[in-house]
Length: 445
Image 1 (cartoon, rainbow, N blue to C red):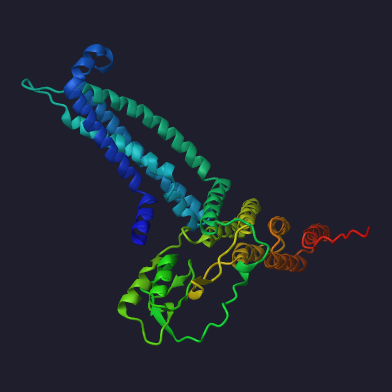
Image 2: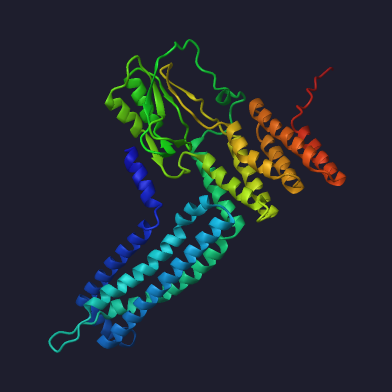
């Protein structure tokens, strides 16, 4: 089931699947209209002779013109798409290319043009000119004109869509929306507890010492997803503990330990194969179970914007703002403990993402590249203040307080102008006020 789910997910987001469906629909539409022409086409032609009337030569000319123009438009559309991919890769980050490939508008547009071309070919093939038997699918030919007019509208919309999607604000917003959707999917429970039990990650007591048998990974690549339910079922069936050696999004070298199993003897081949099948390993990372990859995309865009060759502070500021939005949503969620129990027994020790690791992923590299950049340092302080305002969990606030200290340290070492230092010190004081607990007022009356 997990394999079928992954296959369907890859198929649904592939670049060719939607165009293939549209082409198949256009073939079915052409066949249906030709069949309608064979049965009731004469009645419609008699009712609307000026609209549907066309001889075989005229019909062939119409269909040939539309088919040829659609293939030209397909070539233009592919060229525009490739130029957009090249520009996005060089200007922002190569990791956002999959977002453009998965773009549903681009897939539908290519499918529409290819579908119109295929439709015209099918109808053109049925036109007959002979003394014994002649056939012109008048209804199908007339509908091809409607499709051609619709294709013009689709082309105009596609040009507008490409011009809008290549803007930095649109690219960052799309990456942030996909990341927040991943956060909602992976950490669905909203804030409702006062304690930081999900971050303490303390191992259950009275866990005996175990002998760990390693299971090697097959293939080189990034861990895209893990079937946690399958790991739990295997651990319960064999009455053992399964310990993950790598987290989602990390690179696995073939032959190195993938998981370890608490057994006195090496696991049998069936168990090894089942454990290996619980992992999806690919050449690239995916957002399916890896919200850190979405954060990585935005951080890469910020790093590229802060590089001396680009020097685009505004884009980096937008990246910081959207990272603050992602982490603010994450701060409201319960992150599961790494220790997974079933019936009170420890069964799986997972390697998962924590609030601290995601905050570090978001801000550390940007902070390191913002040497002397007052605008970025101010926005980093503002981002931390925003995130801290939505959570009262002590461990998470301590993580944010450390970020404030590191930003202040960098500012003190790299900002020399007294006026800029004064701005940063004033902003820093405002942020630190949010970390001071309000005094408890007691009623002395």
